Length: 203
Image (cartoon, rainbow, N blue to C red; front, side, top):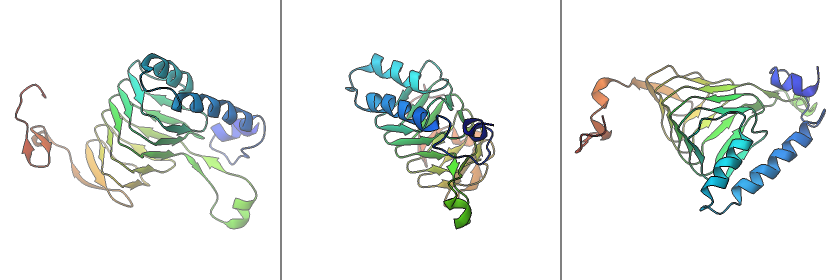
């Protein structure tokens, strides 16, 4: 197997061999172009981000600046929005569903290094994929670690470090991130904590 094949198979690999360094450089050029576009160049921003991502829905917007390793290992569904300073280390696959929102400073890490110093100093690293379901809101300054699966309709509270899977329909918060309760029908009428909607067209 090439080092790229090893990387995509979630096996230990060396990131500077078999053209991987060159692939990252090509993506860095695209990212540089994207991050330096004037914010009123909306159509150019849209076409550029679509050329970076491996797969995306029609309605996708990522605020500048944005960072990723390869881009092509990221798949996002329809109605994806990421706020400022989003980082996706897409050594492994990052698959995101539809109607997902990222607050500022969200970081999705598929990349990692061995724990033992001798193993780490060998130069081997790894990438283990992350999946995020539909209708998910990730709060500000959240870190999602390698191998995590986040279910549908989940809310992750600000500042959380997600190290384990989160089931569907849950609010999860903390470091390490833990489920605090299920989202239920009774939550529908509130827009913030105990504040009730004063309009009807939110339903």
